[in-house]
Amino acid sequence: MPNLNPEITTFLSGQPLPMYIGGRWTEAINRATFETRDPGNGTVLARVAAGDAADVAAAVAAAQTAFQESGWATMPPNDRAVILHRLADLITKHQDLLAEIESLDVGKPRSQAAAFDVPHAAQTFRYYADLAVHARRREPIALSGFEARTVRVPYGACGFIFPWNFPFLLVGWGVAPALAAGNTVVIKPAEETPLSTLYFAKLAEAAGVPPGVINVVTGLGDPAGAALARHPGLKRMSFTGSPEVGRLIAESCGRNLVPVKLELGGKGAAVVFDDVNVETVAGALAAAVTLNAGQVCCTATRWLVHEKIRDEFVKKVTATLGGMKIGYGANPDTNLGPVVSEKQRARVLGYLDKGVKAGATALLAGGPAVVSGFEHGYYVKPALLTGDPDNICAREEIFGPVAYLMTFNDEEQAVELVNRSAYGLANSVWSSSLDRATRVAERLVAGNSWINAHNLFAHGLPYGGCNLSGCGGGVLGPDTLSDYLRNQTVARPLA
Ligand code: NAD
Image (cartoon, rainbow, N blue to C red; front, side, top):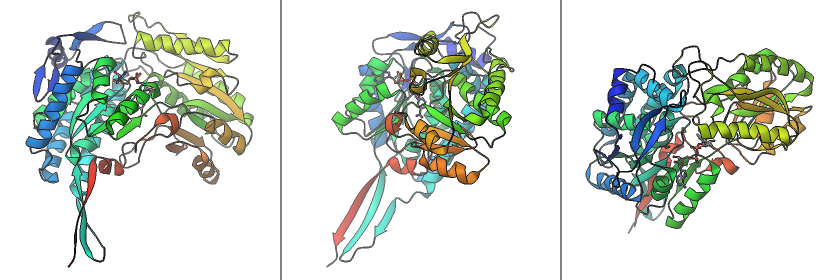
């Protein structure tokens, strides 16, 4: 293992790493464990408590008790905001440490985690803490013959299941609005990447979040995640991950009539018109498809390039992709870290194989990469395929540094190709004509259409998907806070 920050060595020393339930650090009731690995060198980072339905039941019970008794749900929003700002301060104070943990567990370049994942999460807590202070919790309804108002109150215990690509950032996106509104939460992080969520619980404890308000159950998707999704004690559920598991979560929530947010996969397109600076756009799309080793739900993986600039674009983009510095996440010059696991690497390589067998041409072959000194890491070279728009690699989410190039010659064709996708998360349009870019952007069926950029996230800019990419209101927007406040009317007839 590389030299670690001493604080991380201490954090990882108490193995198996315990879960956090009701303000206590605890083993799994059945004492089971699982291991989490460093994708950069394949070694085991830690053994972690593997919770199941019994641990989930304890965590939901703790969240329910905290909702009723800790004062979190009823305290003035300003007081909750003070605690959440303190939590954000602690995240900021531990930014380098958290970035190191995230890089170790996910494989991503530490510099990216330090520049984006961690500060963005801190900002999410600040944004929702401030928004909640100003939320209207009692609003009169103007009605003749009645005195009436709407009252908005938190729901209760809310469940969250997260994937492994942005574990820390997504915890912020998910739980910050729920907590700011006064709910209590049970979090199930991905089994590949539980570490930063456990560290988050430590920081929440230090910030003075009352016991039971935040609970973390580590464990496998089934049983831990499945038990959480079907627990009848939850009042809301949120799931971020694959559409396949999203369906299972929705089925469980449907049975309990629990509202659910689903933030699922994507197959984002970039439409590149012939009036762009080709070098700039090639650089931006190469960066987008290799961000986090391509494990980004909304990134641009289908590149629709106007046929007039196709050759120039291919020349520039293959040079940029081929020149990426593949390496260990802690190395400052690494642009492209490993994918998260051996399973994920096999998935990416399998798709390349299937795509080519189905008739695609590899403009850049990709394949496994070997990094000197890190031979057991899960490294993959970037790949660029081209061919039929119905090729498996043009349709399905690969979740690796692989793009699929297609050409078009007019707006109609570009729109038709983008909207063929079963997904609907995010697309981008690149053109120096803002009229054209806006016109096309509005016709693309997805939760997000970006212009002359890809992967745009801002607090206050709602982010979510449609079709296979999810439903339930999304995240990051001002309305996300409202999603965690239950509306109730109080009315009396006037004599
Ligand atoms: P996944 O669906 O396999 O797992 C996600 C989470 O679900 C993990 O915590 C896992 O343990 C849990 N899980 C697995 N089986 C379960 C079950 N039967 N019941 C309950 N929980 C279960 O997804 P992944 O491979 O971790 O992540 C990649 C996927 O996530 C991609 O499709 C990606 O696009 C998507 N994603 C979407 C967003 C978004 O905001 N839309 C963000 C990040 C990732």
